[in-house]
Length: 171
Ligand code: RP5
Image (tube, rainbow, N blue to C red; front, side, top):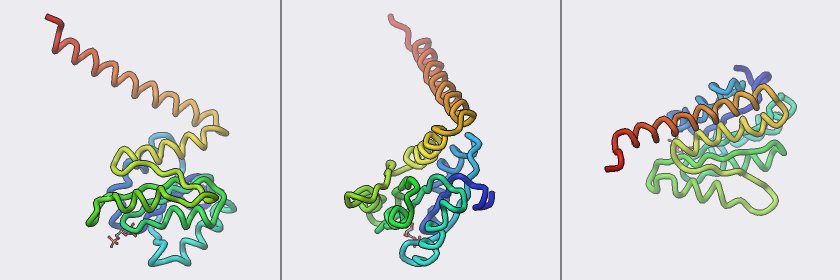
């Protein structure tokens, strides 16, 4: 999917982050949201980040997802260069296993917002879902697909409940 037709950009600070971001990529793919996935670093390639994010709105992007580990500045730097909504994924790993990335991503100064999701696969999935929910505000077909996803998820919980009840009847 090219950056010109994508609605969501998933940016990661390192190629090594990619396996942790698959739940976000999968969530957006399943909901039919055109997404571009890129590697660029707030520290190692700051000019690339600035140019990409500064031009994101003109390129048709609607939401930026930025994922980084360690001293995770990528989401904050993205938010500084665009008024598009930015969702930050703190990537687990390294000496502090993501606690550093969580605090760096979530503790933005007032005035520049980053919607930070949790550390781990649930957080990555939620980043994709949240981006889809933002887009669904102005896309009825996507909103219907999102509702179907929620219904399917609820049906799975109900089926699990029935299974557990059957396996552990009141006696
Ligand atoms: C961050 O530093 C990246 O997002 C990555 O999570 C972390 C380590 O990067 P590598 O040294 O593995 O490339 O910028």
